[in-house]
Length: 345
Image (cartoon, rainbow, N blue to C red; front, side):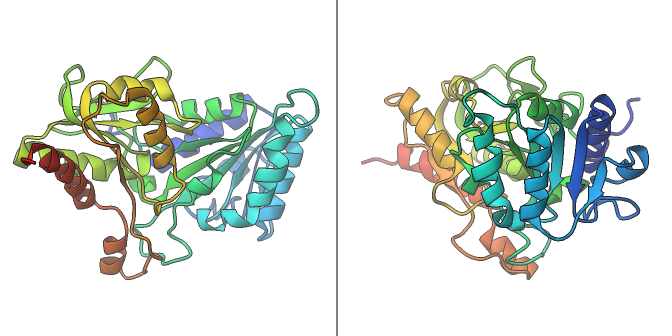
C-alpha cells in the first residue's frame, strides 16, 4: 500500500530544502522565517537549522525584504522571499515592478534575476479584509515577471526549480487553505475524477476529468487555490444535471500557456474561467482574450468569467462565504450558459 500523500505545506517545505541543498547561493528571506517559528504557515520550518546563514529573518518591511532579495539576485545569488500575508505585497510592489523585473533587460543585455516572491493568499480562514485577499491580478502584464500559483497537483520541487531556472523574477501565489490539504497522487482525485498532465513537464497544466480523451460540455480553467471548488461543482453538474466538464489547472499563470489552453478548449462547447480575485484586469480576463482570439466562431458562448464579489472580505465565516467564490458560484455560472444555449429564442 502506498504511503498517504504529504500535505501541500510539507511538499513545499521539502522543495525549498531541496533547492537550498542544490544551490549554495540561494537565500530565503522573510519575517519570522527562522526556527523555532518557521514562518507564519510553517513553510520554512527546519530550514535555518539545515542551512544556517542563508535563512534571514528580517524586520517588518516588505519593500526592504524584496529589495535585498533583488540585490542578491543582481549580484549572482538567488533568493526566495516570503511575504507573510500576500495582502502586504503592495508594499513590495515598487521593488518588483521597478527594480527586479526591469533589471532582467534594462542594462543592454539579459541579466538573470533569480527571485521568487511567495504570497500566501486567499480567504476561507476568517482572517478578514486585509489578510484574505488574492492580489495576483495586480502583477499581470509586467514585462520580465512570471506568475505561478500553488496547486495540489503540481510537485513543488519541479515548480520551484522551474521558477528559479527561468532567470527572471517570479511571484508565487499560495492559497492558504491549500497548505493543510494533501497532495494529489496516483492519477486519482476521488471516486469519480482522474487527473493527468498536458505534457511531460511536471509543471504542465493538470487536467481533471472523468474521460481524459472525450469532448465535454464545458471546460473549467482555474488556478490551484479554487481547484477543489471547481471539482465540487463538476461533480454536482455531472451527477445532478448530466453536464460533463473538464478542469484545467495551470501552474504558470502568466505569461499564459496558450497552446495547452487552446487545445483543451477545442474539446468543449463552453469555457468558464474561475479565480478568487475580484473582477477587473485579471488573469481570467487575459485567458478569455487568448481563447477569444484563437477560437472565435467555434465556442457557443463568450468565455464566462467567475470572480468573488466586488467587496471587502468579512471576517465572519458566513459573510466571508457570501463574498468569495464557492462551488455553487461555479455551478450556477455553467448552468446559466448551458440553459441560455438550450432555451428557445
